[in-house]
Length: 246
Ligand code: FPP
Image: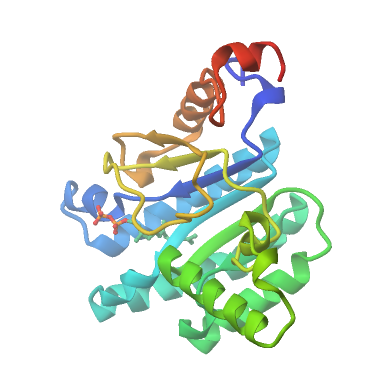
């Protein structure tokens, strides 16, 4: 932690965990072995973020588009997810972590939803870091669903058209209860957002790192955080205005 200023950590860190398949392929291993190794990285990063004082950690674990992968890989990923959620609950309790899921829950198999509900219930009283897994998540789908619900509320007279602004709209998203991410990390060298938190990332600092997720460790996390801390977040203002505190 020597490099880091604990006062300037991102309050909300979002991560696109990419490169499990490439990590495995480069070792002549099956893709699922890469995902398994990826789970180990998840454990390490969750624990470290909670220890250093990140308030919200959101991990892109399974996208709405990932259903198109070969059936065997989807099944294996679902079973890894279930195992992770069940095994981690005691550790979440020890670390005061509150578990949360965003995404289209109705697409998930019942056994996953059961494990998710259970973990959410058991950890609901925890007051430390909020760990959110994005499962069957797609940002455009999220925005379209929010627009649909909002339109329903307008049609029913619960909300008037004039009341619609950014804040109100945000309240219809899965992330209604969370601040926007301050920092997004994507591993594996790809420089894309891939339909992740499109609305919420409007002012987020982006960090792309050329290392596959199974090899991303505490040192790499600290490097990303140090890089973030060296940036000036202007939110459309000038540097001079920021320095003058306006
Ligand atoms: C990207 O690697 C990773 C995923 C699609 C899934 C991420 C899943 C895990 C890290 C494991 C399960 C997660 C949890 C939270 C227990 P890729 O397969 O797209 O890699 P590639 O681009 O190199 O093929």
